[in-house]
Amino acid sequence: MKLNSTTSCIQAIISLVLIFISTYLSLSQTQEWIGFTNGKDIRCLAEEGEYLWVGTAGGGLVKLNKSTGEIIVYAKWNSKLPDNYVRAIAIDGQGNKWIGTGVFIVDGPGEGLAKFDGVNWTFYNTSNSGLPDNDVSAIAIDGQGNKWIGTWGGGVAKFDGVNWTVYNTSNSGLPYDYVNAIAIDGQGNKWIGTSGGLAKFDGVNWTVYNTTNSGLPYDLVLAIAIDGQGNKWIGTDWKGLAKFDGVNWTVYNTWNSGLPDNNVRSIVIDRLGNKWIGTNGGLAVFREGGVKLKKSKRRSK
Image (tube, rainbow, N blue to C red; front, side):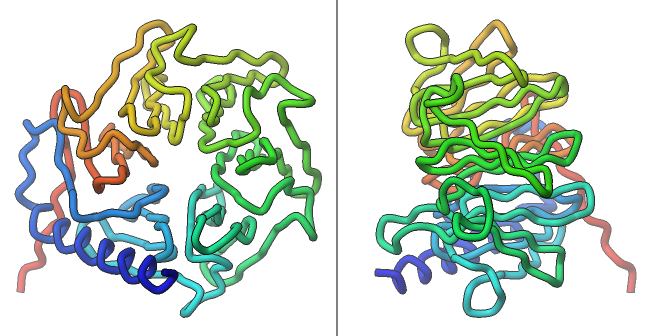
């Protein structure tokens, strides 16, 4: 079953890239949704200029050039990636990639946290650090360079490069110890998506949003991203995508939008305001008012 998982992920990556190559230069700026429905098993996304880093469920880590469709795959068989199930990616101010490996029922638990500087790999796990659990499901980096690391069962850990601080249901207002997503807004608030609702942490106080006290469509939150206007984009398990402007909630799903699947596992927002959304049904890109993508320049012969 491990081989089947890996094979399906590689096929998914190839399908995704082929669709990118064939459609990229002809995208209409009046479209709101563009779906890449053959690219399955996407678990996390991170943007770095012209590149999109894609974490997969069993196929490792993919570096995708958004303009050309060129890919580089990092996996256990060709690199020092500790596990091929990549659930979280974040990029710090020095360009280091922080990679979280997460639980996959067939393959067993994850292998902790990896730091990749483009050449060297550094590993953190429960035996050599203050990481509370080896299933790393979310990573965010604040303005001071602290890494906020969500785990599947161990709550949230803050890592300043030396010291580790753990927040869980027993010592904080975190609503659930199974953490799936973390995002940090312009005021430094941490937005934490758990399997028991959404939490906001300002460094002192905790505020919890769930289906009973807000417009959140489902308490199992899988992804969070924050746009330039401060809107929170929240992906849920089986109930679609929610936008929260601080007061109002708007929900997008397969019935009222071009979202390819209601299981939204990853969201990244690029510099043009496009929302890149990874789902169980593939990758979609969305922007209110129309998708905008920069066309690659053709070289003259």
